[in-house]
Image 1 (cartoon, rainbow, N blue to C red):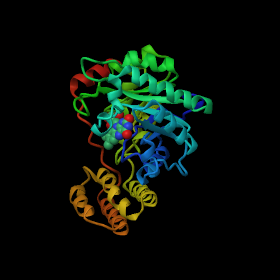
Image 2 (tube, helix red, strand yellow):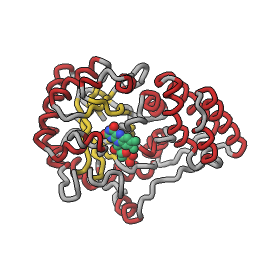
Image 3 (cartoon, rainbow, N blue to C red):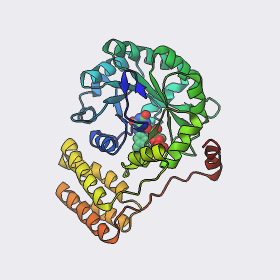
Image 4 (cartoon, helix red, strand yellow):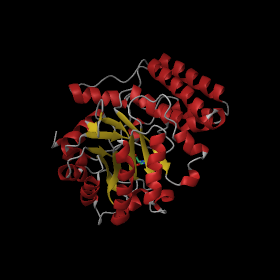
Length: 350
Ligand SMILES: Cc1cc2nc3c(=O)[nH]c(=O)nc-3n(C[C@H](O)[C@H](O)[C@H](O)COP(=O)(O)O)c2cc1C
């Protein structure tokens, strides 16, 4: 599929996750089979654009494939300026965030809160498209199924946004009110897909190759976007691509391979964030990799106390060497708890 003029290598995308999908993580996912990755949300507030955090988030050095940057905000002109600012720094796609339920974002009427104010949402989209179009940069948008159960307006909004020039829509099948609770539903994704001509991406609770294929079939979506299932499991993209192409499951990766890719991930992480901040922010990534592994919980507690990147790096290397004595391949992952009812609904389409 294409985003505007850009042809993507496959249909398995990394979801934007603030504090997670920095450049090293995106790079790793792309190396392991993701066809596309969106940066963490960047603020449109001009006063914050020079902060260290924002500059770190806007670092795309050496990132393979398309550079896509997500912006969030409430003021159309600021959003248009933020789009131009990021295009100047390498963005080839600009994504508007209308999906994030975080209070910090919503109390300022950004993120998914914008779905409640359709006029403002449309003004923002129009301003961003007007800023990007002359530079040949496509604008995409990510939203939820609606604001709340009684106000599921993704379909009419999708039509408005498409008419305003948005070139791809991602739908997370939960309402703002749900946060991350309950199960994602895919009926709204299918309804949006039927209502617009631009590519539509399904998102929410897709945690296995089988689920990716079932959601693609059930919704007719052009691609799937994976968030939490890629945390500590960035090889999930190649597993999905292989399964959807062949119907066969790849074996889990070898422990030795995971050791190597995690150590490379850590080196890139320290290089971007610096040793001090890097050692702290790397802990959550390491925690995800070792979750559900034998000895993982004890290791995580010990590793969290280490304050120095060399010690952290060595501890990770030792843990995986030890694990390799016990097993050749990583165990099968523990999946999200998809209730039988939803499983049945998806399977009727497969
Ligand atoms: C830690 C975290 C941070 C997130 N940050 C963003 C963000 O910056 N922008 C956004 O549009 N969505 C954000 N999301 C939502 C994800 O992109 C995605 O829609 C959601 O996690 C559902 O997909 P999943 O079930 O595959 O995780 C975030 C989610 C998580 C877990």
